[in-house]
Amino acid sequence: MAVYGWIGLGNMGVPMTANLVAAGHTVQGYDLDPESLDQAEANGVRPMKSISEVVQGVEVVFTMLPKGEHVRSVFEDPGGILDSASTDTLLVDSSTVDLETSRWCHDQAAERGFTFVDAPVSGGVSGAAAGTLAFMIGGHNEDATRTKALVEPMAGKAFVAGGATTGIAAKLANNMMLNISLLAAAEGSQLAKELGLDAKVFWDITSASSGQSWAQQTWYPVPDIIDSSAANNNFEATFSADLANKDVNLAVEAGEAAGLNLPAAQLARSQLQHLIEEGLGGKDCSLITKYVRNDEALEGYIQRNEP
Image: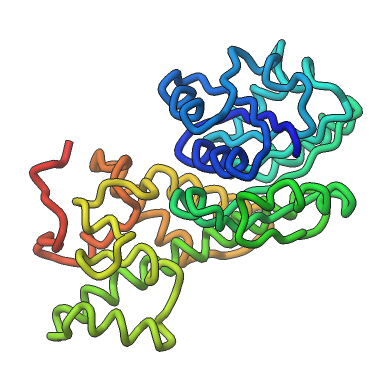
């Protein structure tokens, strides 16, 4: 059994570490939010008071943080990972960040004698809880293979994507595709309703047909069709518009840097930004479905709850 250090015990980090503990591993965890730390402790994680405490005596340190700036901070600040960890500790970032931050982590770690791997995940909070996340791992082959074994209790599948930053590159492209397919689920669900189709019958048809996608299967924006839909709960976030917009922004920026035209991604970004501008960034990203309807009467959404 291994000893893990974990920095970032939010919506993803708490269930991921719970699965590590359930598999018999020891996890030392840290988060700025006391409630998150308490929740992780209830699942068997050893709470630590600082980053420097988390990294002591561990085989690997995972970071799961909201933005690239947070990742850079926990790595480079005084008392941070690079200051406090032993150089024989494997460093793994599972955050969704920009390519430049991931590249910086690889470079800074190498300069200080550390081994770093980028290993973002797909599958959301439900996948984190179920231990079925897809890990996309970028780094030297030996390091990536070692990481693949370490994530096994949290993963349905783990892929060695290639060298440094290929894991985060895969995540950005994948999440761009996800948000584009969410547009299709939003528009298709509302068109089917207006054309007189029963919502469950249409969902069954698309599930067996070419309209099927992960978004259609998991985030279908119609209530009482699938248990995982935010439409069952007034579009309270399963994955917020703020986070989805961040991911699409990162993909569009990467595409622009590569000289690519990504019009579908730009459309997805514009609709998510529209939600944020309305003060609905904390709502589920599938609430973009409300822009399909001119009357704004979206089934499952109670507008009086808007901020």
